[in-house]
Image (tube, rainbow, N blue to C red; front, side, top):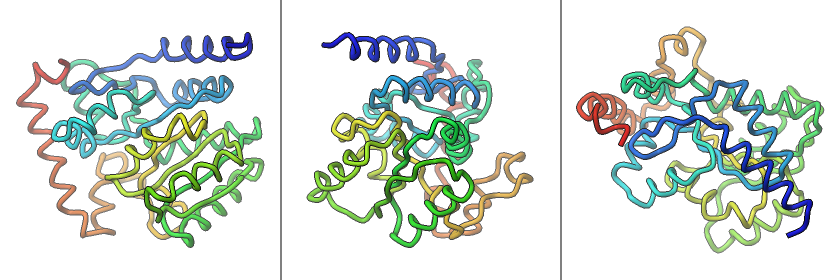
Length: 262
């Protein structure tokens, strides 16, 4: 290993060591606030070491509880931020509160804002071609100094993974935002993190739909009441089955209070 690579590894190790977490059912959820999270990811980009960032919500934690493979993937992620209000509530309920909710959509905005001054390169993968191109245009309009190096729709199978990875690597981005289906998004990132070689690889769920204008983000009123999930349900009623997991998660945490942290 060269001295340069050793230095990069040392930076990453130091950064990871500083992340305070609360273990919710074995998933290490960051207790950092937004400012600290952005500073941490900035150091990761400077170290240029692949990092998977998961924006966790109760539905994902419920999936982890029911699926050992998914749980293993979440437990090994480099950074899990408390995106869902239910995750914030759960940490507080078991006496290990996080500083604040770190919503994935807001984290993207803050990373773009920081990245403008540093001329970070960004690549987007996910959604339809129309949506992903509109999302890229919106980010470029709002953060013109960002280097938007490429986009790719999310409709590809495993047989095309090598081609997609090669295309991303050719552009050498600092940040890769991935918006695919709930079942494939995080597992795909985990499987190909090292091959991709991108410092910050983050699943963003439906953020591309909001950025493109296809969907509207919940107004501040809904955000303050921690009811963004309800506003999204009004726009996408077909999601009601997934939303039923939210009260189930809350009931499980209350029932398992002494087991959540184990």
